[in-house]
Each structure stands twice: as structure tokens, then as C-alpha cells.
Length: 271
Image (cartoon, rainbow, N blue to C red):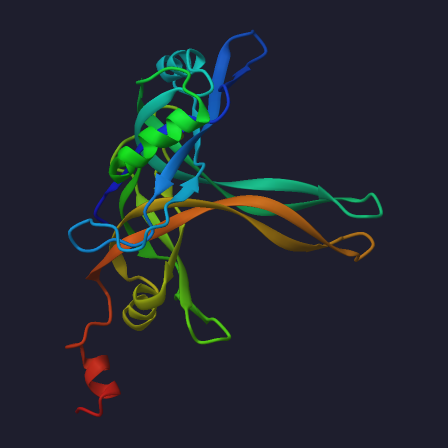
């Protein structure tokens, strides 16, 4: 599989980074969120079509000693440039049912592993930060990634027929080896969410094992998930944050259903 997994962020540090220590008192991990802007609808020339800008809060996480040191100098309100890779990790999430029973479930944790962090303007107010983010929105939240679909895409249409969405998961090989990762952890599995015309195109042209190049952004949001208790079978709802890819464009590379393919001919009644 071709390798491309590049994330470029320009954002404002949301809260002072957390530095975690090991048993010897040495820094082992740093994590923080950055506030970035995402342009939802662009033309082929990169011009905005709809006026609304979306705010997202991707998580930055590193175990690299030099980047932990850099992270420890950051403060809330700092404007930062970050280059890294989109990273996913399967994690166990805990929750408690209304009757006090603890439950666990598997989840897909998505974060950015940085390979470069640079502080620009220090400790700005939220208003000052937003002003700069609006001016720099074209570079605030950029993801370029090549991946292969792990499963067939799923299509959803709104009840009013005025909008639709397609979701699918891809496997993406990293171009860069992350020094704090294990050798077997070089493939990531982010979810992709497309809407409207792109959603219809993706559902029509993609399938399991299709390879795509995505030019888009990181989208973060909070969802509600229903859990059924393993002990008392009580159903309850938990809220959790998720991160996924929101494409501006999707290029179909390999194993896709193209218009000139035999399947397309059959669908059109050809021989």
C-alpha cells in the first residue's frame, strides 16, 4: 500500500499540556488539545463556498523526550504549528450503569502524534486566537492520507431527503516511524465521514479493499452511545468524544468501481 499520512495543524492550545511521569519521576508522555478551524465546503481552487467555519479540538499525544520537553513549555492560549501523523489506538473504555456495575467496551481512540511542534504567538486571549485562526484558516486543519477500506461503506439519508452521509473505515500505513510506537503499530484505522454529493459518489464507487487519497481535515465531536450492562442488563447512555476524517476531496486510486468498469457496464445494461 502507498504510504501517505500527514497532518498539519495551526491552532491555539486549549489547556496547558499534561505531563505524565513514570515510577522514577521521569516524563513519559505529554498530551494536550488544540483549537483549530475547519472549512467545511471548498471549491477545487480551495475557496470557501459556505461561510461557516467549524471549530475542532484534536488531541496531541507524544512520548518522544524532545517533544515532551517542548510541550512542557506551552501554555494555554499559545498559538502553535504542528506537523504529525494521524494515529489510532484501540482502547478499553470504562463506564458505570445506573445500578453501580462497572462495564468495559472497546473504542477507537484517534489522536495526532507530532513530529514537529513550534510555538508562535504566546498566551493570547480566546478572542485574539480566533482572529488569527480566521486569518490562517487555510492552514489550520489539514490532513492528507492514503488508505484502503477495511469494510464496505455505509450510506445514510436524512428523512427529509435533503442530505446524506457515507461512513467507512480505512487502513493507512504511516510514512514515518514513530519512535515511541511499537514496530507492529504502523497501520492506523481512522473512520471517514462524507456528506451530500461526496457521500453519494463514495457509496457508488467504493467498496471493501478500495484505495483512496483523502485531502481533508480532522473533525471532532461528541456522540451518545447506548451501553447494556453485562451484569443487570440495564441500558444506559454514555457520552464520548470521537475524531474522524472529514474530506474536502476523495481521489479513487485502486480497486474502485469506475464508470468504465465491467460492473458499471452491467449496471447500465451493457454486455
